[in-house]
Amino acid sequence: MGIDVRQLHVKNAWADDDGAFVFAFDRREPEVAEWVQVLKQRYTGMKLVVGRDKLDEIQGVRHKLLAFETFLDTHPSFQGRVVLIQVALQTSEPNELAAGDVNDVVSRINSRFSTLTYQPVVFLHTQDLTFSQYLALLTVADAFIVTSLREGMALRTHEFVECQEGRWRPLILSEFTGSYSYSGFRSCIAVNPWDTRGTANAIHQALTMSEEEARSRWEDLHNHVTTQTAQAFVTSFLTRLVRANTEHTASLDDPALSLASLPVLKPQSLLPKWKHSARRLILVDFEGTLWRRDLSREGV
Image (cartoon, rainbow, N blue to C red; front, side):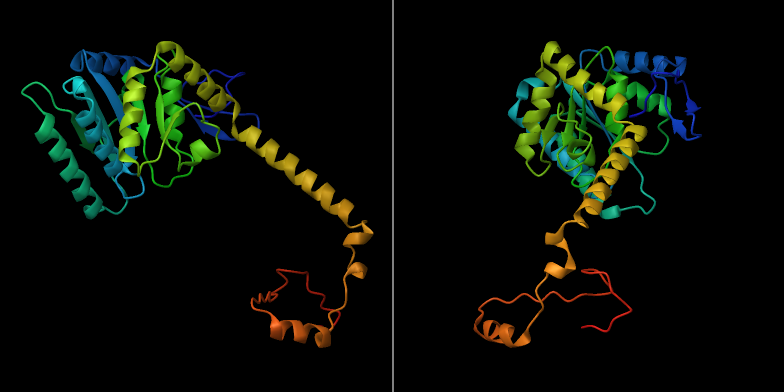
């Protein structure tokens, strides 16, 4: 979750010294443990790839399914041995077009690869999945995959990392998420969702990764989750803000940057250059965006 819990035990929720309430979880709750056992028994001998996204075009659910289909095509030895459990959350306004596209791909994959005892894609388009069930899914997953086409901080990746303590299974993460580009989640398996074959190869890499490599990657991800807290972000932001203000203040005393050093615009010398120029760029000030407007003087 990206919260600092070094001084406080987290169970369900807690308040820090500044009064900010932070939601957290404990995957050791009895209900979570019960669902973990249910899932282990249901999918005995199977590798589980888990995803949880809103069902819209931006979350890249269809791209994920296409990559999974390509994975089964290019790695036939995994047919009958791996299941994709995709939880699709309903949006505030149902997107029938996105749902239709996704359902078509799900149906095609299951019709191509299913047997009497095996279904490769379990697609759950529901809001009824409890949080305990969700944590259990994250705990038993052999890989968690996010293929968003554009997204900010994907906090479900933080939840997966914390649920994997002791198992250390890999995270497959779109390079178009803020979690990858900003949070420092560089120990994930980064994918471009538009590259279907590359994403399929990433699924194979995750499912065949050695325990040593998986643990090393998890430890780095876990370190980012526990150190990149809201408090750390605010501290970093304020530090850079103070530094920028200090540099700006110092620049005001630099003669080279003073208004007196700026040459006066002489239209008579500018016009000939303007007429003979092949490329022209005009910057027009608007409400002081380029330079602070001085209301005490008349100017252009």
